[in-house]
Image 1 (spheres, protein in one colour):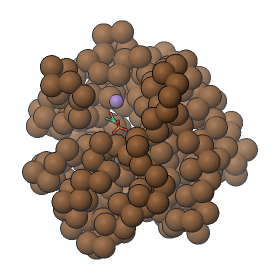
Image 2 (cartoon, rainbow, N blue to C red):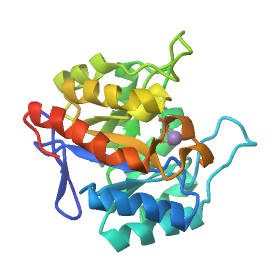
Image 3 (tube, rainbow, N blue to C red):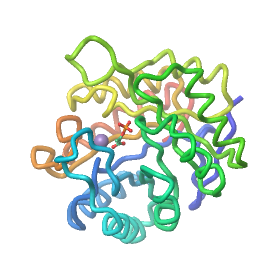
Image 4 (cartoon, protein in one colour):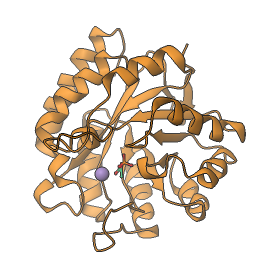
Amino acid sequence: MTISISLPNNITIGGADFTLMAGPCSVESYEQTYAVAKSMNALGLRILRGGAFKPRTSPNAFQGLGLEGLKILRSVADEFNLLVISEVLGVEHIPLVTEYSDIIQIGSRNMQHFPLLWAAGEQPKPILLKRGFMSTISEWLAAAEHIASRGNQKIILCERGIRSFDSSTRNVLDVSAIAQIKETSHFPIIADPSHATGRTDLVPAASRAAIAAGADGLIVEVHPNPKEALSDGDQSLPLESLSAYVDDVKRIVSAMGKKL
Ligand code: PEP
Ligand code: MN
């Protein structure tokens, strides 16, 4: 039985309500974030994602706007009454990110960063714990227990794809992991079809599969101009596709007896 996590604005994750979080990979500017939030709000989406501290493979890639990015996220979200989810890369980011964000994201590369898990467990905001791209399900659940052991049970798991031999997609969405988590864990689980596939064209199909497997929600990357994105443009939905995407998601969500 999945526990439900209550968030501000009467939002619940893990019950009959399906949650669609969306937003840019990285917060790049006020205008970019505003454009995304405005479209989300028009479609009834309530949780805005955006990285301010970015875990980039190359040190030469855009590393995020840091504090400025958090301020942009918060002010845009407040304008539309949205909640914010943003990532922490280290223990030192926790005070800052918890000040500006409603949900704290721990990324794939940090799934077994134990001091970070402990520190996240010692503060009260909900945590989104992404699956390590080379981690087993039992390692992932053990990481969640590290957080819970420090007192914070408000944990949302996120299947974001695991590494495989086939380079035609960025990762492989482990659909059966979603069904397995529903059987063995009481934490809600959402899926990230953007990082799982790395390809905008595959995001809708991966989303449908995740919902059908029992996911409690999705977190999807959206950008006003993916070609110009400073990170993950190849997997971001352009704003003009968002409405059709949400309709597509809603069809499967209602077939599963849930509501978006
Ligand atoms: C992200 O959400 O932008 C991100 C970096 O995700 P992951 O940790 O799954 O790679
Ligand atoms: Mn990304």
